[in-house]
Structure formats: structure tokens, C-alpha cells
Amino acid sequence: MSDDNDEERRAKRRAYDRAYTAKNKDRRLAIQRASRAKHREAQNERRRTPEHRLKLAEYKRRYRTTHPVTEKEKTRAREYAKEWRSRPGVKERLAAEKRRYRLEHPEANERVRAWRLANPERRKRAIENEIARRRSEQETKAGRPSASLCEICGGTERVIVFDHCHKHGHFRGWICSRCNTVLGHAEDDASLLLKMAAYLKRTQINTSPQLTLPGL
Image 1 (tube, rainbow, N blue to C red):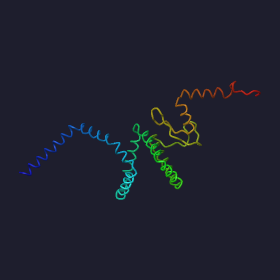
Image 2: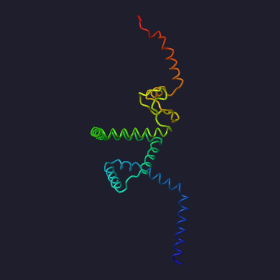
Image 3: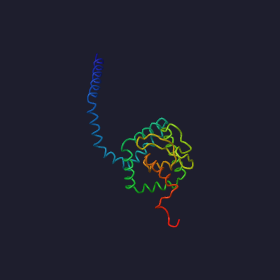
Image 4: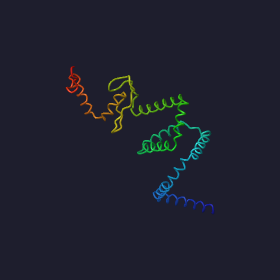
């Protein structure tokens, strides 16, 4: 009989806890957010210390010796990092953090330069891998592979780049670096480009009087 009463009390307690949690969910979240905001700066300062970074790196090394990273984890991490970097203000905050760190730790710049000089092949492979990764992402977004010639001028001697609308963000086509630069300087203004084309047609035969040289 005692066991039945204990089980009944535990069931009532669990039901009460669930009801209380559901009723006070917003209040509990507000308390948690306020606590995190209150201690965030102190935690960030602690995480920036060299001792904490070394301790964290050592922990990660020990953990990975017994828990190798799976392809599923790598894919999930890349997707999360991509989504996180696309959030408003994150790119600017990361750039500010890098500038601050370089100013406070000039020796880090020397270490990076020394490593690049000592490992030219590894740096070259890293750059090639990053270019390939970005091109793969661009082709996925475009919905078709990169073209071998410019879709504006038809040229093949220049680098083909991913062109997108700076106003709406959608993919427009694969064009060469020269055409992409022209569109950028024209600020994607079609009427300005038409005026420029008309100007070239008008002036390619008849030289403007102010451009003539005396005696010619």
C-alpha cells in the first residue's frame, strides 16, 4: 500500500512540475536571458584569456581522440556556421573582433606570416580548397554549373565569376571579371549603360571638337 501511495505522490509531483513549467515558461526564459546578459561580458573576457584558450584546445584534442568527427557532424557544423554568419550584424562583429585582436596581439600577425612562408604548399592547398568550396556553393545557388565563357561578352580569357543582384540577392549569370566590374561601377543602372553605349556609338567616328589637336 505504501508503494502505491509513493507512486501516486510522484505522479502528482510530475504533473504539478509540468503544469508549473508550462505556466511560467516566459518568466523562466526572461530570467535566464537576464542572467546571461548580466554575466556575458565577464564570460567573454574569461574566454579571451590565453589560459582558457589553451585549456579548451587541450580538451578538444582529448575528446576528438576518442570521438572522431563524422561526416554528418561536419555537414551540420558547416550548415550552422553558414546560417550563423548570415545573421544581421554578425559579419561586422567578427571583423571588429579580428581588428581588435590584431591590434592587441601584433605577434599573432608575425606568427601567421612566418607560417605562410614556412608552408607555401599547405597555404596553396587551403586557398584552392576554399575557392572550390565557394564555387560549389555558388553553383548550388545558381542551379547550374559554372560557364566556360562570359554570358555578356562571350570572352574566355578572363576569370568567370558568379554575378548576383545586389538589391534582391538572386543569381543573374556567369560573367567575366571585366563585365562584372563594369556592372559594379555602373551600379547596375541599365539606363546609364544604355547612355554609355549611345555615347560610344556617337563618338567613335566623329571626334569631339574639344579633343582635336592643333595641326592634325
